[in-house]
Length: 267
Image 1 (cartoon, rainbow, N blue to C red):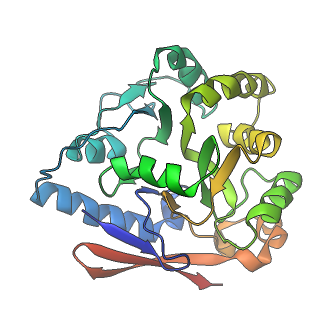
Image 2: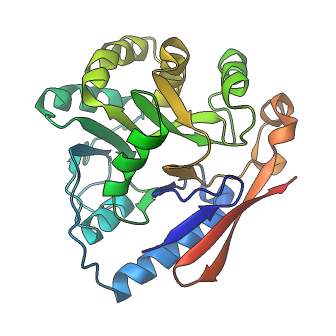
């Protein structure tokens, strides 16, 4: 339906993650508007499907349909939602919801997805084709421009592996994993959670270092695209000073109704 080309790597991701605040996500929010305009005015006549994958969505929103649900329904992708209406929500709750549901998952793959800030651009079946063809790992996360939460040790580790890419920092809002490996890792996730980390992203960044190369980051945006810009005005001084070469604004240009291009403007 929508083809978004990352011009840095000439890749065409399937999912867009508008991570961070709306102030940092002008380009992503505009693209979202284009996607929903398409959904409202067109009909998808493909077969849809999930290709041996469970799509696991966490949300604290009540019964309101989230952005990822709207796009999944359009592309006929079945999914599971947990956490609706949870009071006192914090991101680390996602680990418990996943652990509780994991014994019920029988598919070869599991994908974890945030709810309100993620959209699917095109048929989901291609995600597995690309994952199997392009990646030699058991779990893959989307990558972003900013190291969050601040952790110099983890940031240096990520830069040492993915330093050629601006999208070198693990973001836990979208991931795909082999289910059997996920069952192995979830024990560590719950153990790290007991130390009261700032977010589930801190947990997964630690596990990335522990399990690499079985756990990797989609640093060339072949499956996932984060759209949060890294600008001085939006970052603490310690954040941008730790990686001054990676200050970039994300811009998405509309080529025509079906094609868009993402580029970075150096700050």
